[in-house]
Length: 124
Image 1 (cartoon, one colour):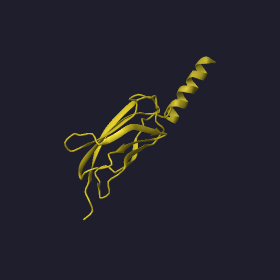
Image 2 (image 1 turned 180 degrees about the vertical axis):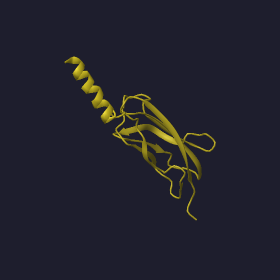
Image 3 (image 1 turned 135 degrees about the vertical axis):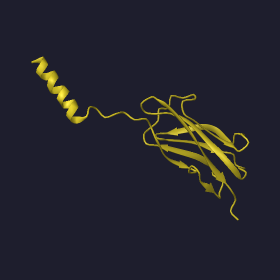
Image 4 (image 1 turned 90 degrees about the vertical axis):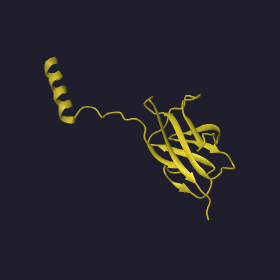
């Protein structure tokens, strides 16, 4: 009987393809958008992922924004709200290219990191 149940279970796994794989969080939107050129200085950077993030405090979820010469222009702490992380930017953001770096902890507990750039130029 045990062999019959085991065999039936194996057949079910083969037919259904097994259990679905657990994926990591994925970045689904960002403001400012990666590679974009904007004409109004943003007050903050906001990233949204496809699932809620784990917020265990400390440096578990971190956003930073630097200008083209490596100076940090993000201020304060990274805020986590469900699937979104954000950080405020300096009130006097000069025109130029900026790099956003992020590190988050996905719902499955795995840390993920990435970066992208955007350009701020004043409207003519």
